[in-house]
Amino acid sequence: MDSRFRIVAGVIGLAGAMALATQVALNVGRSGLGVAPVVWALSGYLTILTNLLVAGSFLWIAVTGRRLPYDWMSMLTTAMILVGVVYHLMLAHLYNFTGLSRVTDQMFHTVMPALTLWFWLMETTRNSPRAGRPLLWLAWPTLFAIAALLRGALTGWYPYPFMDPLAGSWAAVGMALAGFVAATAALALLLNRIGQNMPLRGSAQPESPIHNGLNDFRFLR
Image (cartoon, rainbow, N blue to C red; front, top):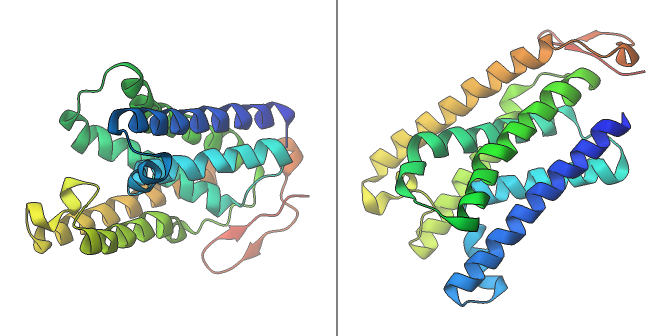
């Protein structure tokens, strides 16, 4: 990997990790609880878990200098864009953060999604075997939705209003989740089309195409 992108990955990873650590510290200070219960509470949010996966992935890239699989990075990019779009369209009006809370809020929902998309466009799509399996990119958001509903059924707490049957009905939750999955699938298909059309860098010319009936799998030298 180009050392410049390795450095950028490190900066993105550190920024995400610092935002997460700051959020934990803020919640501990406000609630008076210990770190463990605060972390457990925060782990119920797609925003926090996705930012954690993204920060960890970018730090791994920075430390090892190795690229993660295209489908993994594409799944994270899809999820991060989803986090930002859903928050700004459906949830942002519910909150009025100030100070460091506003900083972490913008980091999670605006800055990190933008940086993740930028890295995916500039580095991942231009240097990776681009298998193009967008349905796999729905795995993480879908897994989270299932886990959140199970956790809510056991504890009575749901992370988002549109996932809470106590605030409406299971029919409303089902419709919201159907829309969530459809929007995620549409986003994944759009990103797949964009990724497949990004030009490979000169040092990453395909060795041989292998046709699987749907996509051309390109392998680096």
